[in-house]
Image (tube, rainbow over all chains, first blue to last red; front, side, top):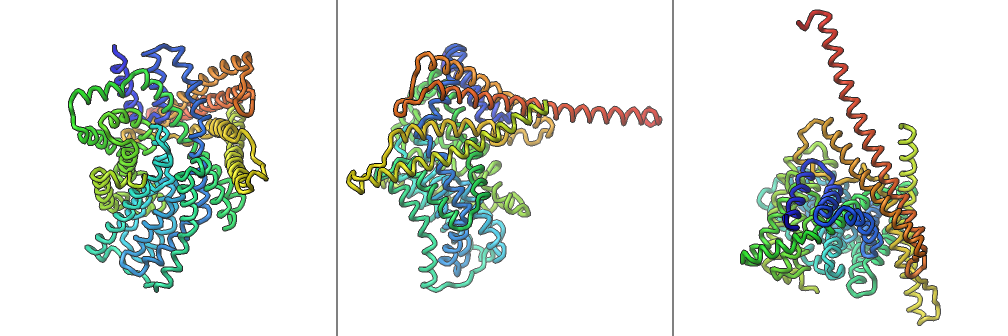
Length: 428
Length: 190
């Protein structure tokens, strides 16, 4: 049996294991070991268990991951989400649907210091959901806004997903982050437009809030200052070559920690933040180690090149290849965690995309936007479940109904990014 | 068995705490590195507090930070696709989870074994790290202990999980049998 066929068989087995509740990290590691043994031999396969984890965990490039997570957790502990929401509410509060607009805007700003969608959705929903409920907002609009707004965390840099993509495909982290800025802001703009259209068509969804003067609006905008400052230091520093991503992440985490202490975080809160960071980091690194072992197997099976040759011989146009990959992402995104999906699929499909002539950085942005969809689409929309945990009395169907217009807005953004690659590559 | 589980759990918890300390130290090392470098640049080289090996400290810090966190988190932070199995009974779900945790035990113990080989060969060659000249044998030895803990804790969590599921099933069977026996004695089941 040829190596690519063994590769395909092992991948099918891995998907079966994953469907049978096997932790994704374990499924990737075991598939990697079994496949490598099948193609090469048992003894070399065992040596992957030493070289794979050691090389990954001593790789300096991976060190920003725990620090970016720590920064986001400290930002939550510092109750920065409340400050952001209040600032945004002063800006939009008087408009019909103003609080929903404020929530999405605050999510976008919070994303600038948090690399995780789930953390963004969780932090903002605890603050904004009770306020929207108090002011008579429809459950579908309130929850849909927050679930969708949370997804901005995965795109607006610093983003763990963009960082992981850059590391897997050996792209510049700084360029990847810069490429995420316009698509992230475009997503924010389209979400705001979606809210405006929804409340215009159905005014019963939201009531107007207290009008605010221009002076109040301008004063309120000061609340965005610290976030934009930290964001400018991180992204500007990386892009201008002043900091490495690790340095930017460490400085960001340090500043967020100081702000949290100044705002009353005690030792218990500090320990809680570190504990939360470690649990999230361990979850991600379990998968990274699994993906590393799986990666050795992918190399010897040559399955990626086999698929690239196969697609090349079929003479498919590049956009058909892209469409096939994106459909695969959307389907997998419905059942799988976003980071797990990137770790699992990108090493396989990346050569196909490069072969088809697409820009690797642009594809990273398109891939992450597609993966983002999985966070709010049924049946496993992670952000939807986060909102459900904050508001258990709202039926899950109601939340998915509220999210639907935002899914359409994400699809529109995806189409715009495919039609106009400059939206992602313009700042590079 | 219960005592061994408690001892291993508490070792894993202490390793987790040590991992947290390493995370904060990593952050501090990088911040100090950037600060001293900036001071050097601003003072045109007059104030030189810079130090060598910052990158190596962070790299090995990351290695130990993650490896020390894994034993405590192995049964807490796993990404699982439960869409296709959410309708099966809780007992079966727990049984399957227990079996999968044993998979992590196999991985952890195999990794520990491989790292022990690496430790032996580093001891023979007296290899050191590039910048700080840290003996690699010592680093591998710590990795051996950490991965062994991962394997051992996974093994105990898996076995305890399986025992609790199976004993619950047996208790339920016993209860059902006792109930049927009682009904038979009372002449209800004939």
